Amino acid sequence: GAPLTGDTLGHLHAGQPADAFLRVQVSDYGETPRRWRGTYIAFEVVATAAVATALALHRATRAVAGAYLAEETVEELSEGYAGFWALNRLSRPVRIDADLIDARSGEVMWHGARTGLAGWNWGHLFRMSGQVRDSLLATSTHRSLEAVLDGASRHARRELRCATPPDPLSVH
Image 1 (cartoon, rainbow, N blue to C red):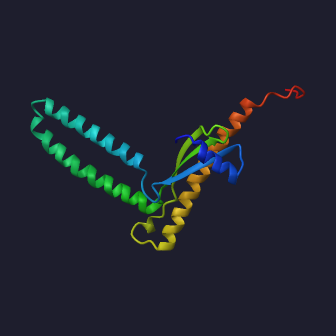
Image 2 (cartoon, rainbow, N blue to C red; image 1 turned 135 degrees about the vertical axis):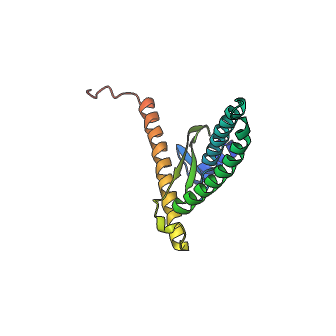
Image 3 (cartoon, rainbow, N blue to C red; image 1 turned 135 degrees about the horizontal axis):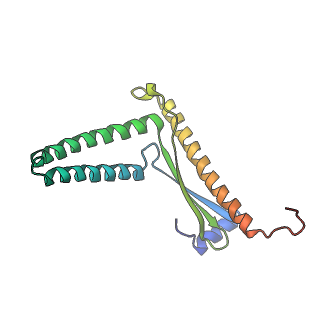
């Protein structure tokens, strides 16, 4: 993420003095993360185009290249749609992006993004109450937040170990 400006930093310090701030943004709430969809689509397009091209390059298989391309397009669209629908329905993914920001300079010291997924219950595929949906979203949110906080904490501990001079009286 972007560093914090002086005005924003001053406002935060006035309300809550700290050495660092954790900025959190929740995205893809209950939906397959955009990056996952993009990666899946890019892979399928490249793989399908490569096979169709290979078929078109050989005289013996040239006639089936177009049919292959049409069939794969329909198949991958339906599989992708059904797969993302099922993932969204069963695990209610929640992605959290976070920045650990130095409170003095406003610079981003660490950036992390994690996606939490609730456990699957196949019974939820076609029947789900609002209460169950909310519970799955809460579980996914909790899991992604735990993972983000763990990443920020590990980074902060590494930074503190590097920044803290060794104790001359300690025995190693």
